[in-house]
Image (tube, rainbow, N blue to C red):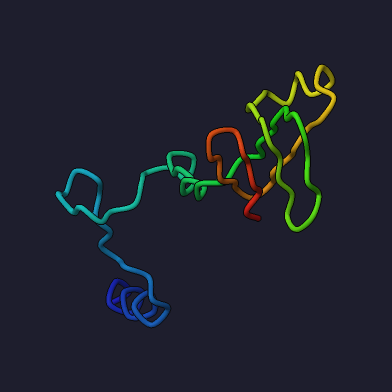
Length: 99
């Protein structure tokens, strides 16, 4: 009688009194331990891009002529740097920031 009352209370609270185990073949079962869960992958991000250029045009979103892409660690070695934060186009050294 006590089992029936307990099962009724558990069912009313939405608790499954017969949980499945990972070995039961249920493909949708949760990991045994919360630590086993992996966070969802981060969405792809557009990385910042740095260019060393012969000349710069600061009008609009920024552009430059005679540009070569460089690492952000060598920016100090370049006299004219174009920094694109949200994408760019590169047409044979003529770079235009798109974002």
